[in-house]
Amino acid sequence: MDAISDLPMLHDIDADYTPQYVKLARILRDKITSGALKYPDPLPASGVATDYQVSVRVAYAALEMLEANRYLARPKRFQCYRVAWKAER
Image (cartoon, one colour):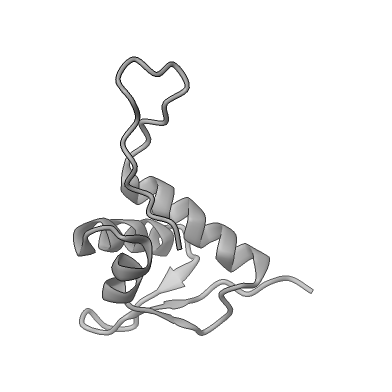
């Protein structure tokens, strides 16, 4: 997978200054809605961080954002996130 941490060039008018955790949350949301990630697939933060070459803190922030928007759920504090969104048929 490609890293999402590429920095924009100085004075690049088309540069994307969106925070990394928002970019990652969008990527994961698209995978969930497309069916690439399905209910109840686990999404451990360490695995997400490794796959997308970001820090674990960035991964947790993205996963928390997806949980707040009901794409993911975490039953208990020390368990990994799981896909909670079910595709409509």
